[in-house]
Image (tube, rainbow, N blue to C red; front, side, top):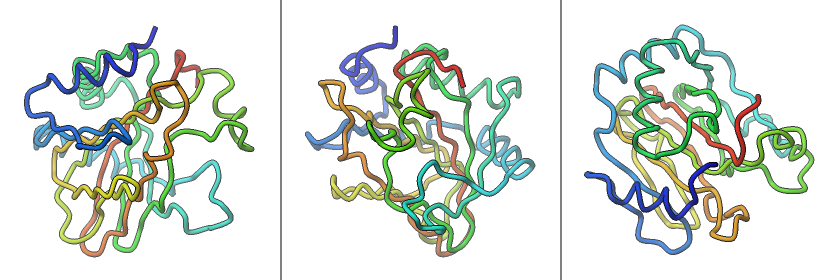
Amino acid sequence: MIPTSDSIASRLAAQGGMQRVPSPKAEVFQSRRFASAELCADLIALIERDRRPSTIADDNGDAYFRTSETCDLAADLPAVQTIEAMLTALSGIDPAFGEPLQGQRYDVGQEFKAHTDYFTPGGRDYHTYCAHSGNRTWTFMIYLNDVAAGGATRFKVLDKTFQPEAGKLLCWNNRLHDGGVNPATLHHGMKVRKGVKYVITKWYREREWRG
C-alpha cells in the first residue's frame, strides 16, 4: 500500500534541508539544491530532444490554458533512473504508484494557468483518468534551471510563490486528511518573461499505476 499522507509528510519534514510552508491549508514542502547541476543538465538535454506541445485533460474552453511543451521520460534512461531513486528514497512511496516521469519546457510567454493536479471527482474526465489507478496523491516537481525572469509557481490560496532555482524540489499533497481532494493546492505555472524554464514532474496515485 501507499504510505499514509501523515507518514509521508513526517518523512519529508525529517529530511535535512527540507522546509514546510507554514500553512494549515495544505502540506507543501521545498528543498533547495535537491538535484545536482550535472543531473539537471542531463534531464534538460532529454527534454530538448523529445519535447512536444503539452496537452491537458480539460482546458476549460481556453486554448491557451497550457502553452508549454512536454516530454515523457523513458524509465530506462540513466538520468531518469537516478532521479526516480532519489524521489523514492525521499518520499518512501513505492515506485509502482508513480506515473512515468514527465519533463516540461516553458519558453517566453508560455504558462500553465491556475489548475490542480488531481482530477475533480465527478468531473467529465474523472472516470477516464482515474478508473484504474485512482486519483493523484502527491506531486514532486524539480526546477532544472534558473530563469532570468518569470516562471514562478504561485499557490494563490496559500499566498505563496516559488521562484525557479536550478535543482530545487517542490512537493505537495493533493489530498486532505480525510482522503478528499484539496482545492488549496490550486497553482499557476506563471509566464516566463525572459529565458526558458525546464522542470520535471512526478505524480503518484492512490493505487498502482496502470497507464
